[in-house]
Length: 498
Image 1 (spheres, rainbow, N blue to C red):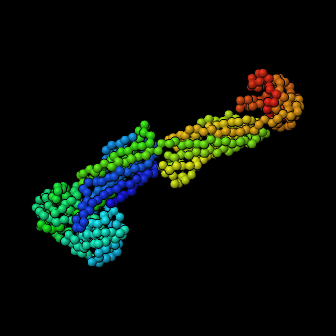
Image 2: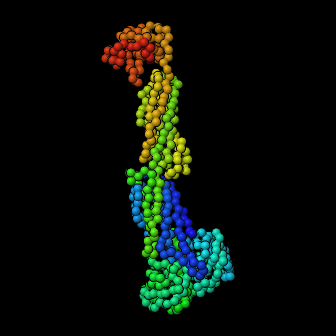
Image 3: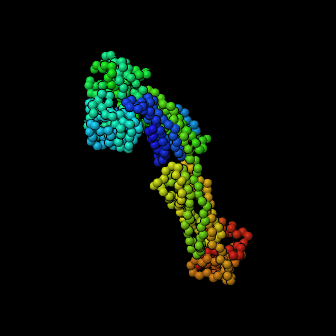
């Protein structure tokens, strides 16, 4: 069994999934592999981005060539959204190389790696390591076992080839071989019968390569355009050059190609948590059975926490306070998080919140919970404000916004009045004075203010300042007159400028 693991991802985006491919190999001397491409069910977790998510799909097929031959992916159906036509991403052919110089009698071949090779089967060694089977010295061997870096139980010089000294760097591919039972004739397209063609493939962009007489001469590499049972259709523009009698060996590289592609999956508005699509891989002119990509769609929104702060003083100088904003986001990379306000305070002023900072931003990926997203904002109370204030805020990740949470602000209480001197709680002195008024009409306020030497008296009404200028015409003091049509209550807070 050959197992490939895949990762699903985005624009900034990450995702993980796996595909498994089974290739059947008979015992020596013949290796058997499937003609069709293969896919397997897989799964990925994505976010609910309205622009869609790029999902990676993979499959495996046997090309019958030492060079990579891409298969073609197609989407057959989708649930909970749409999957765009896959865009081919990569193709890689299974191969390895000799790691240690050997001898012609070696029963173990030491290689760089055996990952992906079947547990038993046949190998083709291109001893000069040039990647071209038509010019290099070839040997075909059988093997019965493997370790991570070696093929064991090796039978040398199979399919009529000669045992060679395995050179360091020599290319090694899985292979199949058989013998001619009915020889081809010298036609541009002709038929050849072999003893067992179950491991041979055909088709592809340039046809699978059949190596006739792998022992070295006369050796030819011909394209296999079709197969029916044990009969192969081979073609060459110049006709069959060599004479290939019944009993002669033919071989083919069992080139295992791992293909991948990306498909953009866009969920429908009604889909909340899941989606899927089926896909096939066509290789050698045959479509695989459909694999299913199951998608878990994360749809939860960001969240924020209620907060509170206390102002230490609003008089004689208002003292600002830093308020901490806290939230979390489990769908987006947290670097996109931002805090904004949905309701402003009435007794103070908010600054601009600092850039949101979230835990493990450098390690963030789609689907990983982002905790402890924080920011700070400066709340500055109005001069002389008392009681309580509040404002609301939300956390956004660029596409989604949390439900608002409230921030409660506790302001200082009113200072208890002291003995009345004239119309104010205490005598004003030169400069700014914060005290309370003993009560009376607006006209009485003018008299009391003039008697105290005040230039102006300011009140806080509805979160705004209104100012009475001593000795000014009525229209200048109209705001105070309008605010206290029924008179100024005793204990009203004032700021007196002397």
